[in-house]
Length: 115
Length: 114
Image (cartoon, rainbow over all chains, first blue to last red; front, side, top):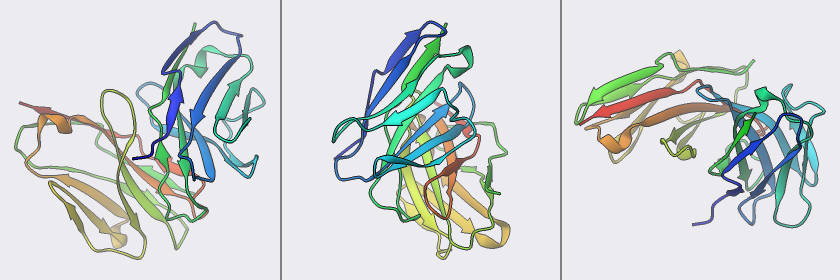
């Protein structure tokens, strides 16, 4: 069964460093998302991406964050200068079409720890 | 505004007991979708069910069942004859009318004691 994959599974970084989190969505899906989950809290929407551009983003997704789809398969989230409060689990998700009925399928997550 | 409330933070049950996880939502959309996801200790989010706002029929899948009541804006999830493998955090989510954003509740941590 097709699935969303994410790498790395865990990443530890120093405050102020740049990190890139990678995701490979399900191959025929067209809509891509990033969410984050601070430890013990709910999953929060960051950004949605379609047709090589951001379609929606939340207040959390400030100038420190960027997303891109550098090739036909990867979808990346970059945090330019990490802060302690960026420590969280980051989930990538993908969806086949634009309909609100469509399920978003989530990857296994990348656990980011900023020291 | 879209909002999902899961008032139960933690629940513990003894194996084979039935347990119901509550979910209450708020939305101004007339068309919307509700979801349940399971997050086991390993951390991934596993899709369990999707339900649209026009279909209030209850659904049963094995030991899992869902009760959607539009009148009370609730979408509750029941596990019958619980098992240790059911121990996880369960999230209820609401999709926006564009489907682009999922609004998650704070989750209910279920522990099934052998």
